[in-house]
Length: 336
Ligand code: XIL
Image (cartoon, rainbow, N blue to C red):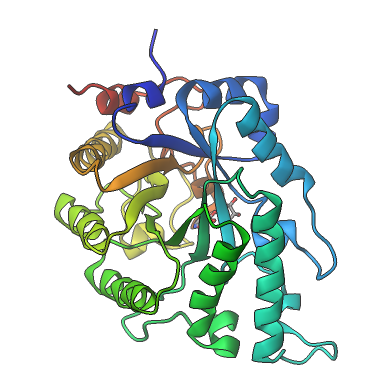
């Protein structure tokens, strides 16, 4: 009988997983979550859209359920996410006449949102992804041209961290992003984070989302990212790990790529090797990393099955569609 993933990694880091209220309600899935993981993240229900759909409306039920599940089972909770350009309702950015809101109004709403959400779970959520994906992939521009940036300017990032820190001074506050191993994007994130630190902004960690594939990241670039953020005195976590059985080439990532899920033995082998390398690099750098969170529980339901291609199965996790550990599970848990 296999041990839980968290048990194999007990002397390394907290192993976490993204959950939905649906996965917690399923007896088989919740059993798997309890057995293998020490931390959970709400896949969607704590995002601004679901939790705060209108200025005077908060929807707490599903988020409370996630926190209560964790407490009942002695698990930690990572909060995801407070300030993002996606899954954020338009009311944040409009005034009472439906025009673009002023900087002051947008910041006061961000403050209220963060105070209320972080305040509600004070002491129960140990880490928050405060700002998510503020950096664009395109070579130009350090800051993503989001509504936050257009209306408030770069200052929204510092303010978000300050509001979160005021609401729960013990929470570990993260900047979180994807493609953090690509040198140009890493440089931009470093620029932002260094500036925040120089200005005394309460930021404590950087989350590498870790939506990887059969051909990225390389061990060198992954290690370089971990080191460059840790060198600033920040803790690092892999916050949304999955390894696609497709490559990150434009053809295979395009929304119009063929639908058919081709889970060939070759792809499975490449995925296994990539996972093995990633976990090796993480274990080697255990003093700099404080957690690894998988994005979804098993290949039965992964967000990648609808992104970027709707309806293309992806098989990116350690457990198969029947919730059984895959070959790759045994590979990443067999080490000295
Ligand atoms: C994804 C969820 O998994 C999906 O269910 C949802 O439809 C879209 O968002 N980066 C993030 C996560 O920070 O919040 C995203 O989660 C995946 C990419």
